[in-house]
Length: 131
Image 1 (cartoon, helix red, strand yellow):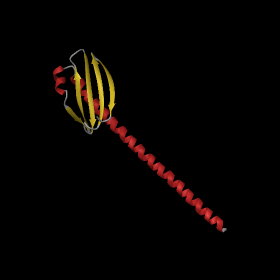
Image 2 (tube, one colour):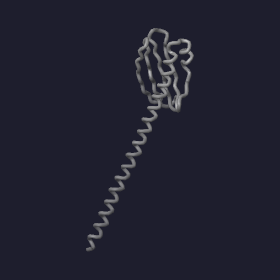
Image 3 (cartoon, rainbow, N blue to C red):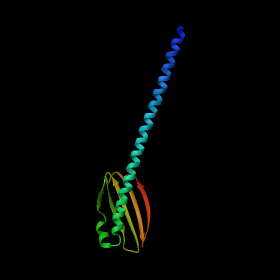
């Protein structure tokens, strides 16, 4: 091999190694950001489920004013988070709001509101980060 070609091969190998290393690093960074995104979606889903458990409790008590008043304002723990129930069931249209928190009240919050009119129920979801 002539002298000039030895340096060219070495330079080519170094460039290929650099390009492959850069691609590998980009792949690792992309995977790490995707894992963080999935973890965030999981905690959001857990907040929804915590709120749903509060709504179930409120619906089971909504037709008995005494039992419903007993659950208002209390904090209930469900899984990794907690929820509170607020509402007004005095009229024909009953409004129930459940706030769920994870891991505690200072952190992520999810709010679900339902309106009960007779046997029909309508829902509204509100998402709030922190307070």
